[in-house]
Each structure stands twice: as C-alpha cells, then as structure tokens.
Image (cartoon, rainbow, N blue to C red; front, side, top):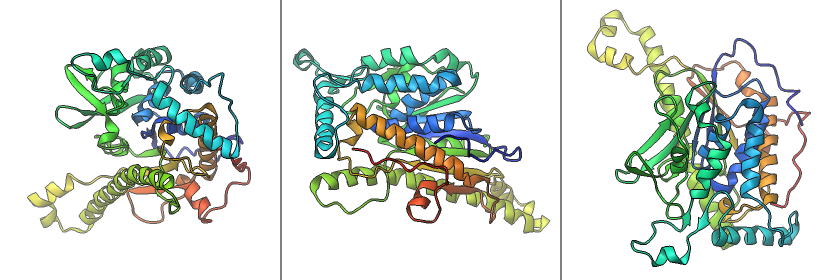
Length: 394
C-alpha cells in the first residue's frame, strides 16, 4: 500500500503540522512505522515532541535530513533488536508466544544492545549502591551516532521538544530546541524510567522519564504561546479499549493499557474542552453590548479567547492479539517488524481517509479524529486501496 491514493492537500488547508510521540518502550517501533507512513505525504511535521521512547524516535527524525530519517530509525530499531544466533525468529502460534516471553526475560537479564545493560556485581558491592538496575551509557553512544544534534539546534527544518521530570522538585519540564541547545542527555533524561534506568544530570539537576507525570506532550504543543492552528498526529502505543481479561497475564496487560491510555484520553479531552471554551469566549464577545465589553472583567475574559483551529489525529497501536504485560520490554526482531508494519498501515489508511479535510460542521476549536477506531466499529469503510493487515504472530 502506498500514498498514491491520498487526497491532495489543498492550499486552503494551511495548518502547521506536529507529530506527538508517547512513551512505551519496545512498543515505539509502531511510532517509527507511523512516521514512515507519513514521511512521503504532504504533511511533513514542523514540530516533533516526544516522551521516553517517543523522545528517542523524535530526536532521530529531527536530527536527520528528510531523505535519511526512515533509514536512521530503522538502524536504531534493528540495532537494539539484534536477534541472537541461538534463538530462531519468525515463529508462529504457541512457539511465537514462547518466543515473546523469552525475549522479554532476556531483555530483563541481558539488556538490549546499544540501549541498556544490567549492572554487574561490582556495582552492587560498591558504596554507595546504584540508583538503577541498568546502565544506559550505550544509549548515549547510539544517539550521538544516529542523531545530528547540530541540525536540531540550528532550527533548519523542525523543532524538537522532549519531556522529563526534575527528580528534586517533581516538576515536569520540556527541553525545547526553540529555547535551549538539545544534547543527547536531554533525550536520555526523557527516557530515564526508574528504577530501571538512572536519572540523567543536566546543568546540576537530575531528571527522570517524563512519563512519570504525563505520557503525552500534546498539551505542550497545542498550548504553546503564541498558538498556531495545527494538524497534530498523536501517536499512542497503548489502547484504551480492550476485551475483559480471562487470566492474570491478560489482566496485567489490560491494566497497563488502561493506565497509560487514560492519561492520553484525559489530556486530549481536557485540551478540547479548554480550547472550545476559548472559542466560546469569542462568540460571546460578538453579542455583548459595548458597555459590558469595556469593563475590566470582560477585558480579562478576552485574554483567554483564541481563534486558532486544532485538528488532532489519533493513531493508536491496536494489536490483533494479546501481547502480554511485558510487551513494553519485549524487543524481539519479529515483534518489532510487526509493530512497524502496523504503524505504516495505520498511517497510510488514515491519510487516505483524511477526515481533517472535511468542512467544520459546528463552531468548535478542536476536532479529534481516529480513523482506525471508526473502521473497527464499522463507522467508516476502509479505503479501497488499503491492504488488509496480515495477521501476525504478535
């Protein structure tokens, strides 16, 4: 399936484009697939924002020329999912489930090449004791090899923002290439999930993974002042809807999905409500008499109004089969490839539907679209040119 059947972007649709990538560990290969699906479309992002694995993917995209971005993403994901010579890949059925479980346990015990490795016995015998189970120094080497930070910081093409949490204050913050020079440690801080990964020191302060507070950078991008009308592709790797679990493994997976997907839903709903209120303020001002418009309360209210129009397009990883509670640290090559392919299919199907091109049906500041969800519920027919996804072993 290609982008040849995607509707052309009309000149009248002049919104800026953002790509927002959430955290989710090994599930982040779905995000890479989504980007590949979007890469040749008429909607190149001018702003990339990410948290945790989303920050790593975003940095790789922002830190490379457009023609090399997919190649560099592939180099990262193939590097950290290098298959072992003594364990076969491409298994199916119950063997695939065994492979996934083995891969997750191997990740816990051995780490992942170019990403993280378990601390040795000497570390645990030292004083003071380590503050994490793994060492992530290999990730710095990987980032510095695959990401051109000078390219990010000269603002040549795209803006990059990554979220992290200050360990001392507990405050959430964003490292933004519009405001500071982004380095490898800013990206690493965004993905420093405790107690697995150590905090990262930046200018004398320690930072942990931004997903501790919020797993989505959507609100930061859309609320940043001065606001611009935007089309925002929000890519999440945890699905809010799912079947009732039938065993403890399924219950743990469902718990993880709900825990993280609910944050995305809450943030999206909160922004939609707030921005619609901004538009309601504008509508109210049109009917207020001058003697009220000129009062101090009316002037204060006016400051909260906004005329920007936001379109949020949700792309959510929805595997066709259970993947287990360890799915966010299951790094097998076969699973990575399947997730990547799912991202490509979802992105291209969404582009072919292009619901954001439909005219507004009501006065509203925010429209939210989820094409794949509509297809699953039968509300929308899949594009004729869209190939049906193959049932994978994951």
